[in-house]
Image (cartoon, rainbow, N blue to C red; front, side, top):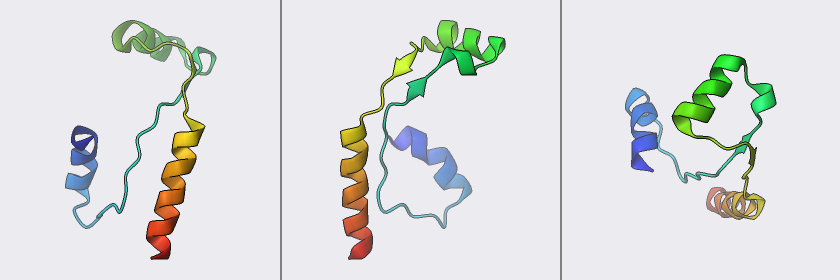
Length: 70
């Protein structure tokens, strides 16, 4: 997680996240141009599909709401 956050936090040191959530996403090859599709498929190894964990996202959002409410 730290590897993903380090670059943007370095560029904006005044930003102090209260919480960070990482979730899988959705990959639809049909929405990518040919070059992006080839890159994602052969370099990254991305498999098309919807991998979002809606329960995990809702749980994180609920925790964040509680943190913001104090």
